[in-house]
Every structure is written in structure tokens, then in C-alpha cells.
Length: 330
Image (tube, rainbow, N blue to C red; front, side, top):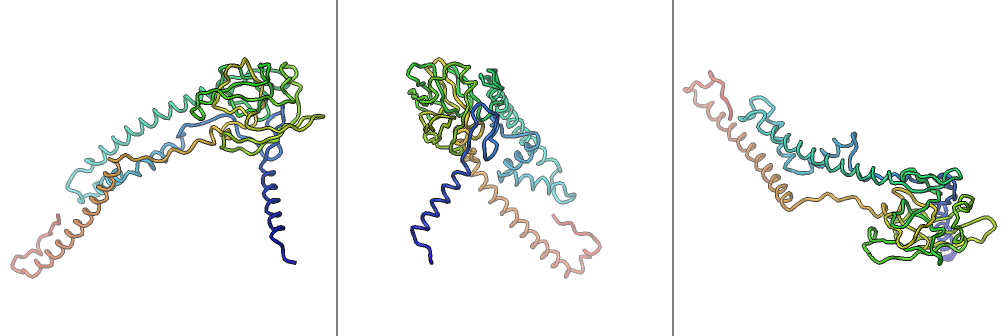
């Protein structure tokens, strides 16, 4: 029997749900970095462009994307061949090396600043439950499933699901200007089943799991379920999510469980690789260098042909006795 359209549609929907389930994560509250499918990303972030190993190949690749550098490199290599160039061997390679060195120093200085900023961010501290007690941890050591305490005017170290807050209405206010540019404060609501957990001792004993969607770059979208023993499963949405890059405002403190860390946070998933940019001058220079290179090739071919014709013609003038001398081509 041939499959009907409805059965095909049902299979498609089933496969989508199965694929979504395989990608979903189960965050074990108050546990180490454990969930069913795979390990989460480290909360250590890195925005630096180079390492000691990758600096040279990446730098050279970017520099020789400029046709002017390629052109002068070819000229410098040709000048190293004896009796080929009327100029010195170092008239091109020394200026080219100087320009490349200055560019390398500039790139190193800028990347060192990025590494310093990364280190400052990764070494910020926050209160975390570790092995049943409250401790102070660096941001880079935070794991999925950790419960953290963030105070007023502090930034959130990772993407958190809000558990409870100091506000009597079980809400908190966040500033998202670093994330979406909006200066007005936004409100977040504690889940009903955890809003009463304002005593740190209660949070140490908290168990259960958060079934969350896979990491996504959609900052206004989140779906999850808070599951606790002997309690109903409570749905979670964007109003229970505290994003990295935002700050707590007008609220003394909040408690939250980490669901996404490091480069899996929505903040970093929205980072795009900086495209290679060329100024108008660089674009014009590249075109001129290509034209100049083609003209050089044509001139070389023309001079070679003329030199061949000239010497072939001289062979008929026997009385000049040119065979006794070595003709030199210029």
C-alpha cells in the first residue's frame, strides 16, 4: 500500500520532534556539568584574533590579500636572481619588510588588548553553590547546572533561568542596553514553584532538572520546562531567562540556574565574524596593481620578441663579425 500524504506529513513531524529531542538539553540543577546528550561549552570566552601558533599564517594571509603586497613580493623575489634586474637586490624587499613589520606590530598590540579584556571578563567573580556550599568562583569556572547569586548592578555571568529574587512580587528588572541597545528596564518573573526559595540553605538542597531547547541566537525566544520531584512540571519562557550581557537593576539580588555558558550563550551566538574590509583607496590600488602587472608582462614579452628579431637580423651582417662577442640583452 502506498503511503498517503497525511502519513508522510506525520512522519515528517515525528522526525522533526525526534531531532529536536535529540538536540535538547537536560540541565541537572545543583550538579556538575551534566546533561543527557553532550557536554556544554566552557564559560571561558575568547575574542582574541590570534594565538602564538596561528598569528603568522593568519597575518600573512590577510596581508597578501592585498594585490599591492603580492606585486611587490614578486618583484622582490625576481630581484634576487643574479643578472636579471638592473636594480639592487634589496631595493624592494627592505621597504616591503618594513611595512609588513609595522602592520604586524599594530596587529599584535590590538590583539594583546583583546586578550587583556578577555582575561578581565573571565576573572570576574560570582557566588556559586559548589559541593553543597556557597563559594566565590570566577566566571570562567561556572558550569551548566550551577546556581548563582547575582546582586544589583552586576552583570549576569551566563544565560540563567531565574529561580527567585529579593522583590516581594517575585520579579526582577534587567538592563539590556548592551544586548539590544534599549535603555528601558525589562521585567522578569520567577517561576511559581521556586519563587519562595529566598534562603540560600533552601537553594543548596534544590534538585530537579531544566529541560531546555538547544542554544539559539534568538534573544527574545526561549522554551523550557522546570521539572522537580513531587511537583508539577512548570513551563519556562523568555520572561524567566536572564541573558549574559545584561545587568540586574532595581533588585537587591536574584538566584538563577545556569543553562547556557560561554560561546553557547545568546550573546555570543549573535556575534558574527568581522568581514574583511577594504577602503576605497585599497580597492583602487588593487586594480592599478593588476593593470601594472599585466603591462609589465606585455612589455617583457614585447622586449623578448624584439630582442630575438634584432639578433636574428644581425646574423646576416657577416662583416660586423659579431660572433666574436657575446651579445648582452637588456
